[in-house]
Image (cartoon, rainbow over the protein chains, first blue to last red):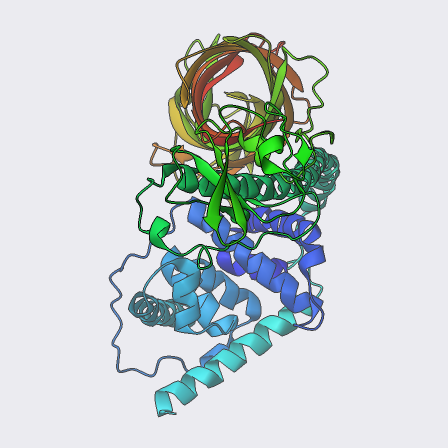
Length: 150
Length: 481
């Protein structure tokens, strides 16, 4: 679960805060867990994500566009490069993304939510979600390139 | 699915696999520090204490429900009893009206009316041939009637008219029977029928089918009031308001602003009216009040408390006691200085924070009321005491906002968010007005508005003391018991 928090938090210290509050939420809402709807780890993961989003919302989560100077027609990810990176490096790269990109990237690419669901969760339009994801991917690609080249 | 989508799906899968594998790896990197478990343990203890307090709202709600149930159960029984009696009363009224109408019709007919031209046989009433009573439908009239009154046509049979004011007795001979100057027997030529004139002033009771020696039934509504002068009213109400606080000792002002948000309340009341104008009110009110408090904190930055975190940045911990309308929060604010950024020792940091609170109160008012005005609209002025029992508080707080470029908030935590050491009972005064609209003698609608302020602070031993105060407006139903 700490890995989940790490992906949403800007740093390790805040990830610990997310984790602590997330577990508090788990204990508080344990009676709402329905085993027929899914496994306990999946439910806990959902709670962690929601707690992280709650924290980020308090900080006025901004969906702004940053200048991403990457050629778009380049293959978005090279599977070999991804395979080459360790999970720790991937998480650290995701952490470095601007918050809006990071949240949408995590929700879409890793948690598997659709753009419609993400729009509902974050109170944004589907187009904003798509645009944030696209730019997040480009920003990540740039960071991967920088890492590989260094 | 396009090539791009397929690529995305592959990447998604790859990322998930990699991250899932890392979650189970035990290399220390994906494990949080021991502080998390300490915080969790502390939080769970506080949470348990807060959960125990949930029983109070349930108790209060159960009490209110029980009172409502008893009230409506009693009311339904009363209504059912009243309904039966009202039906009986209506039937009796119908019978009397029928009697009255028929008698009046007979009385009002002039001697030369159309009906008088009819032959007696056509007008022949359905008189009983025997027995001692007859009904008003047996009344008739005749054109030869000299009196502008009612003429009874009686077949040669014994008759009896129940009398009260005018006891006319029983006889086989109408002339003898009506041995009275004003009641003359006219042996009219009516084909064997005898007609009798009765003067206009008729006591309808005399025409009643109930024998005169029978005690007449009386309808009495149940009146269980033990004291005739005291009247009891019950009420059920709901309303909105704004409950905030008045702060004392907020110097220097670290509270930037306090915004009472909407409060919602409901309650039951009991009013004892002991004279035309004066009454005493009491009851039980349940109130949920929201408020937001904004803080502007100014703290000098010091490097002495700094410690370096895993990521190279410096954390600086500040502990504050934040006063709020419903109590003081011990707050821990952690600021982070970027490893490359510099801040001068003692430099003042302006920090903003806001806390939202939701308090649940159970109140017991005791008010003296002066009522005036004529029904159906009555106005009331009231004043009295109100005891507030704080059932619990929920708190939410925002992140800390720092105006310094090199400083950003890492963590804000509020200790004791449920304010478990909150002073449970406060007393206050309450002033109010109300308007009552009476639908009938029993039911009424009322609107009330009141102002209240506590006379003892919700925290007594804190530097900043807060006194509950606010306004409420409500609408309710009132019923006479």
